[in-house]
Length: 389
Image (cartoon, rainbow, N blue to C red):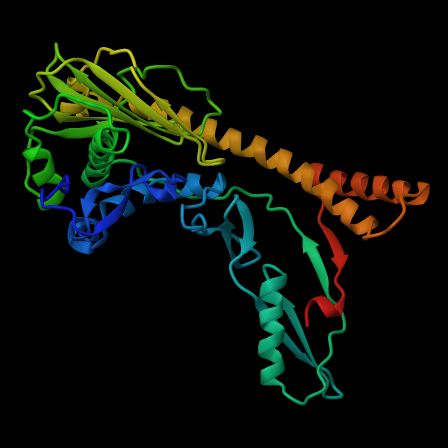
């Protein structure tokens, strides 16, 4: 079996993701790329096509908490705001956290040193205590007071995203091309591609040879095979062969909202075909679509993108709003669930018997925490010294 780029025999199999792992996909094949070509796409000389492609979605990977295939966490968005002079980051899942720990030292008239530490979380607080123990060794250091404070950010968090560019277009073509050969080599689907010459596409992606034969761009003009729900954050690939138009082309939809189309070949002479896949990054469930009905495709949208691009700004603004609204809805459900779980854990220990008193205590904690959450009231909870040592 030959590599789909250099056409040399694949002696050492190398895993290639059909959809990038960082977008929450675990679909991959060892029947597409040789080790050398796979390594090329990971090196700087290639422009790191895959990395550039997924980087444009980092804000959405963060708030949707999308993990990579190798248990790689979503990116943390840095310096999205400043609160009381301290930079604020957005941790995976869209959770605001202080960027760093802050230490303030005070010396009383009698020579007693008091250190106030403010950390983003308990883990960081423990690190600070470990550092101070080493710094003030044998000084009789004790923890006088510790609390877990829950604060709410009451100001806008600012971040920006950039969609598009040549490397992004290459990323779209790379996904479509890989999926086409995945169909034949992994799904064992027979397609009449033998007379088709993919040299222009291969040379463009692998060897940076410019061409007008293949192209990919954002596309909200051509219609998808079916309408997607506004709460759908799945990744899709569709590939088609059109006998009448003599082209092989496809759609790539990222997180259910960002649509691209690309042309792989303009000299197709076989029969019509259509196939697709869908994978939800939240649960990794994979759906395969065979015999997708041929749909009309206006190739001018892809080949003359600037003519259509100005119409997409409003559409993309709507798409971004839909994802953010989905995040808020999901986040709200998760926070309410956490309020219940935290109340249960604080009231009931292993082996406890449920009594009327414990039920009343549980109800009181739930009511208090829900009120704090609903009206964004800061709260404080004492921490036992043992949790920090």
